[in-house]
Image 1 (cartoon, rainbow, N blue to C red):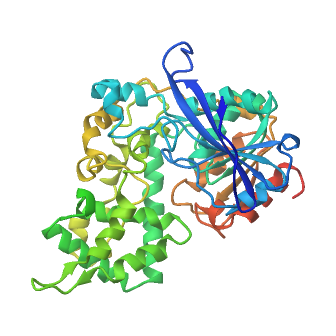
Image 2 (image 1 turned 135 degrees about the vertical axis):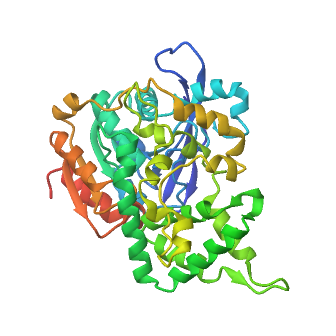
Image 3 (image 1 turned 180 degrees about the vertical axis):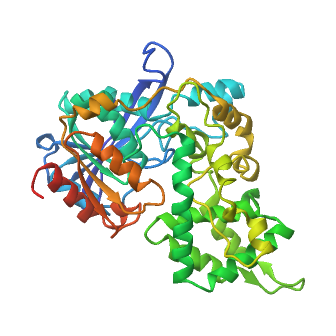
Length: 436
């Protein structure tokens, strides 16, 4: 481990840490990669007297949130913890994964083999490799948001001795659902979020249909070259799973067209806003390994599960919608083959993505027997009708983890720890401590 000189933001002292870990923990003498993490301590506090809290970001493929000062939940955590914001492998300032770096791995087959080491199992091994260097061997508390909660569940399955407590927000995964089952549960939820959006903003029904009809005739290139097709436009529905996402989508749609000498056209402002939402340039790992999060049957590839299951839900078929008078349905947290032709950040990785979709030999991520005997205090915020993580799947898992306490709420969407961070963290801490 190496550490940089500390620096300050309002109310916080920050220190950068760098670690070297094996790419494949089963072969510790083989290739290594770098991890980066940012330590945060409240100004005026002695860090040596504070327990550690490890934050695992959602994703996959996102570095830890870049807070300014004591934003969101961080201020509450700093009241009693020394916080580590880890850039999980392949993200942020850790050894990066992108169209620019992956060619260093060699052929698409070699790239796919490399990316097979970027699931929750490897991330937990990373955490256990760096924990003794920071805590001297003492267990720490983990706060896992979304995919970070998946990682925390893996942690409880394989290395519970490293945990003083586990706090999960919107991140209790099914222990055994296949990718197909995950998406069969997802599409009805996505449809409900669409209908709720249109009930809130009825004028958006015609706006969305008009934009889709325009794109069906003339696909548009976004800034940077992203090819905006109808399907790509529909994928803006990923916004509908966050607390303010419906409002963001509405503001995008309401001023989409401008008059030009050649007739109405999609405005530069609209196209710029859409590009900011859809481009994977900042998080390509998300698109590459997203379905692998649900791969637990060694004999079964994921085989573009979201694309195949979508065909079972014809109401998401834009061509059929535009031929009638139904509202256009946006999609959600789903990755499709067309992403790797539409997005310049992903296009060079198309063959690699195809190989990952066809890959077999994935190992199960969770240990139901060990979870049933769990002794680590665990609390989970389950957001009712969460668009990203199925509520029934989460509650079934909650019943399977001994001692886990749930807080089921419809006050927040999937990003509750961001939108209501201090209250969410306070509630989870009270639950694991038996104070609520």
